[in-house]
Image (cartoon, rainbow, N blue to C red; front, side, top):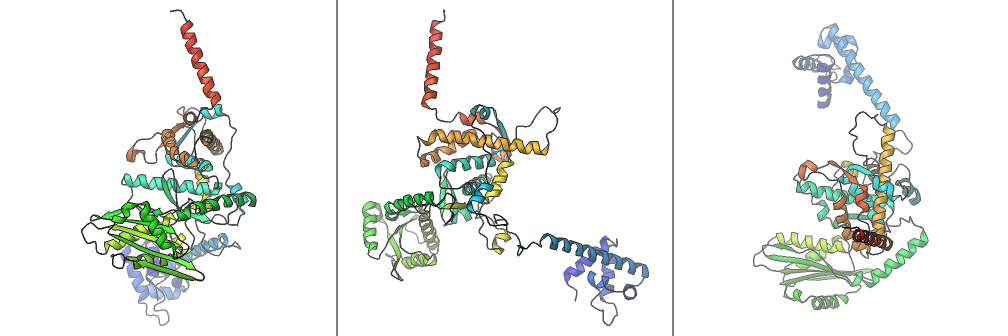
Amino acid sequence: MATPKDLQDLLRLLTGQNKNSMMEAMKRVKALQSANLSRLTLKLASISAIASTDITTLKSAIGGEKAAKSLLRACMLYIKSKEGVADKNIIENSGKNFKRKRSQYELSDQPKTPAELEASLSLPQPSKDEETISRCIVYSNRAPFLLAFTVQLLKYTMPEQPLSSRLSLGQAVVNFNANKKATSLSLRELNCSQSLSWGPKIKIMNREVTVLKRSGYNWKGDEMKNEHEKKDDVNVKDGSKKKWNISKSMTSKKSTFVARSIQISSPSDVGAALEGLFTEDQGLRGATHTITAWRVQVGKSISEGFNDDGEKNGGQYLLDLLRGENSDGILLVVSRWYGGMMLGPERWRIISEVSRDCLSQRLRINGSINQDALWGLNLEDNSECSIIDNVIPVFKPDKARAYLLNSFASPPDLNFQKKKKSVIAVYREKEENLGLLLEAFDILFTSWTSHLSPDELDRRAWGWYSQTRPDVEDGVMGWGAKGTVKLSDILKLKRESPSDLLSHCEGTCANRLNMKSTPQ
């Protein structure tokens, strides 16, 4: 029996190649369907069935030899063209590794070692000639400029990250910034997938992005990796296990909720941890309810417990959250200051949100990733590919690299009489400009690394970016617009060395002496 799609294809063929009107085409399809043929009664309503029918049978079905020949020829050509397309797809996808639709998040067709992957992502590295850099002017928009800025900044603020991770994290920062800007300009509705995620997060220039640990990715060599791991283990033991993680506070109908969590190693730690918390923050004693739940592994079993403290079913709810995440070795505390109005089911949403925000702190970068390389996660991707192929949506470093290589042209030439550059010449020019831009950032950051900690460098970096980014119009008119950037402006932000300061002072003094010696 013909399907609706078969009928649609046949109507499209009749009104297209056979140039019939829609009314005539529908009459002809009806005639084919109602043909008084004992064995073909319901088989002549599809293109494939008509193409396999002889001219005599088709003539008796629709009447008229000319119309039958025309229809048969059109159906046979249609089938032949479809077979050709299918054969082409088979040839293109007939590689020995072709098993499924390629995911946009796969890094390559063949697996690469860490060294091979990092080498394939190398960026242009020109000579450190400040005079050449200062003369360069690039023409770009703000997104790739921010990407290049972030990639170079991470070399100094997160030196444990390989180039592949820096490209991925840089793209995550660009994506965060673009979404925030688009929302503020009402170009896009607020997407809460990033903010509500409670996976591992890091902050780069105060932009919070969700990350994925690349555990076991050894790109520096065993000796250097072991050294980093030892340092990080010391930091974890000294600080993170004894530190309370605090969520953002949330208020609804004058009731305020705040969650805290801390790592514990045995059930006996619960009382001591709570005592220390109330001693450290006396204001918590005034909370209307202090809901607690804890889970800890003791031998081969899990010991757990909770306390509602007057908030009915609150402790059990927190414990269910911990169970849902299979978390152990943790004490979770939610403080509520009652505002005089019942919240109903709304309280569970708020308790859940502050708890998740607090628990995510355990996975943040400080003292918990053990110097592992990271991927930036694209939680706003809703493509079918990432769901069907079960591939985690990370920002691909090779796409970020290609974006950089193609984004930094020279300013438009207003002299139209000059010969137009070839495609290869334009690409090489963009590559050279990118190298000079990256080197300018390197000079800027290197000048400050011996005087600022990585955290302080990260805090100051956004101000430097804001001073040097392409100058475009504010608001919607400037969205995606391009502007020029003088690399000399970037070099002006570097910290002057003692010798430069001395030369500057000597020059100033000499000028003053010359002014005094000049006759009035």
